[in-house]
Image (cartoon, rainbow, N blue to C red; front, side, top):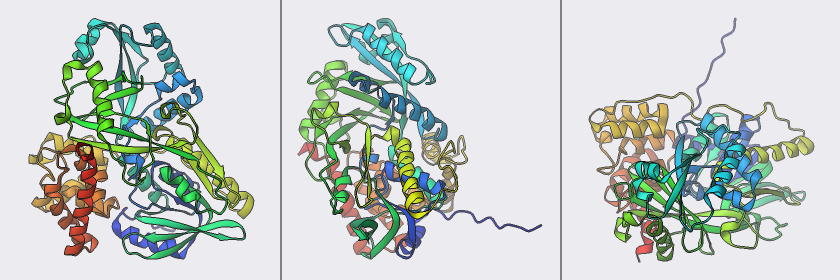
Length: 547
């Protein structure tokens, strides 16, 4: 009986990324994905699981654009019922259920309240009818079906919203997610199934032969190396940059997207405490605004305004902040939230399909197009439906590969397989305390044991990055060794959320983190200074509205 050697997958590390750069230059792939946001990594994951040779390039870090700046919700989109987008709501509810199944650690049920006050639309009976439809579009398989709470029960559950004229509140469930970690987990899952994943690698141009797109000219942002990445099918899943990539194609026929900006406020939970997420309306334009519990913090968002600035560095301005504060003051006057309560802000851009009309009313559905040269592009969509978008893009690529190249899938692709692998319920962080233990399990699952092992080997790694936050110095090392973190921003913005959860963005500790990463990434003193300066620029964006 012959013995088959089982080779475990290589860690998703900075070292593997260097190997992937070489592979990108040397191999021809079945599929090349441009863009490492949630849509791009979902496609890479699905295609790799079908057996296609798959590569992905991302100009910055996985999820560094819209996919780490969302409301951190996986939701059916109850407000889309107002615009009769029943198909989108049905798809979103189905995907919400699927995500809770395949990523239960990252996607967690979140109860919502939608209070109604005298003189406010819709009427209570319309709200109940809408939520019954919402339950039905979720096939009555949500955590719970909705309930209507009378004023006395609302006061008992959430005194903050029990203001004068309260008629009652609808209670229903959606789900919450760490968007940056979901994107990273999907990228790691694609790597596990053989996809060649490369972050910090910018597509600067498209390569053509015989009238078809056959690859992309890629620049390694870290080493400055130029690469010709070749593939049979090229898919442009670059989010708000989708038109930037399409403009490289000689058959570009005008914009697909209309970027809109959404911003969020990060406020201490002690100043805006609630056990539910709360949905309420802006008194200015009737747009839905959310108060979302997030650990020791509350998120308030979001806006939806047309945007024509730099796609790389969106930021909240004073007008954005005042819009959200006005909505909070109107519905939750007892909270008395002011400028001084805001720890930070973050802003993201939605790659909405280009259509006229108010930004708020533009559909969140997605559209897939193929140019005459074979470039496949996708615009629109939302975090909740990323798996559906990835599957549909993989279907389109599979059809082209079969019909034009005779390349066929060897399996059915991404089905119900768990995204998270083995799980653990808890770890002991010793003197670091229960908050650190919970954070490590929530963020890393079984990987929490690696983080703690680093901390046990070196006491300095067991120190917190910032006092009062649960993040350990060991997480920076884990990020480099297991999560392809290559810059200080990768660690302090997306592997952790230090930048948003302390008023100075953790700048006082940034150099210490950079010095820890330096020997693993070959940084000299000048590079450490560049990393700290680059991070400081990102911190300034979170506070730019104050200027």
